[in-house]
Amino acid sequence: MPPTKTASKKPQAARTATKAIAKKKPAAKSKRAPQSKLSPATIHDIFRRFHANVPEPKGELEHVNAYTLLVAVVLSAQATDAGVNKATRALFKVADTPAKMVALGEDAVREYVKTIGLYRNKAKNVIALSQTLIAEHGAEVPADRDALVKLPGVGRKTANVVLNMAFGLATMAVDTHVFRVANRTGMGPGRDPEAVEEALLKDVPAEFALHAHHWLILHGRYTCLARKPLCSTCLIADLCTFDEKTVP
Ligand code: SF4
Image (cartoon, rainbow, N blue to C red; front, side, top):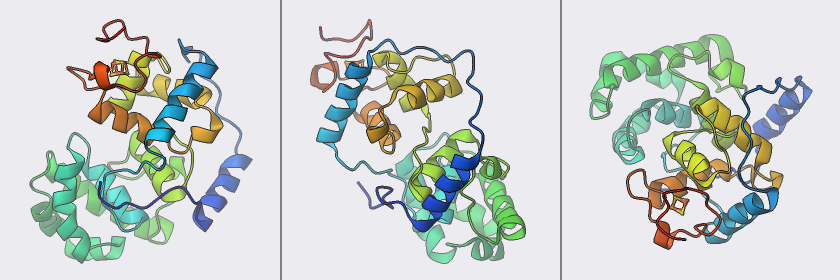
């Protein structure tokens, strides 16, 4: 697994962000928040096993700071982390700040990322979000979801990844893997990513919240595969409620 910035220790920015978020009125609960099919003790057991197996899970997108993490996540939509890393290794050597990226220009950025799907639009967004960071955020990545989702090419999932990995906040970024594992196991059933996010935020034990989305991604990517889940080697098979699991 390539080196990535660890989120286990909160940097200053994280403490400030946590304070700022703590002051905000909590979001109203959606009426559609689904109930977990698993008991709190079972969900605790699942994350206890994930933790015992991989104590410090890391994201697989390579980056050198919060800004390059943000760019990498924007580039990763509908692409593999390995494919993004291949392109960004060279890009981040010449542009690891918003100012350097803007100076590089959209045409050059497009050349660096042309092996990634939807690269034309993504190159455009990378330049536009870099310009916005310079104009509105002092060339820094804001530790604030509302500000992040206003950046070109940045959605809720991207914002949650950045808040978690760069600022150490216990967010739940629901990608295709997290969505599948949460629904199959029964711990976070939901028809759309936001419902799954809400269910998981409600039921994942606080002690595991910081790393929960990484454990679920790793489980979906390497064990609970979309077409043929590897149930016979799954470390939570006895706790999973998926009707089609291939072990008792
Ligand atoms: S038992 Fe199978 S379906 Fe359930 S989490 Fe494990 S791999 Fe996925």
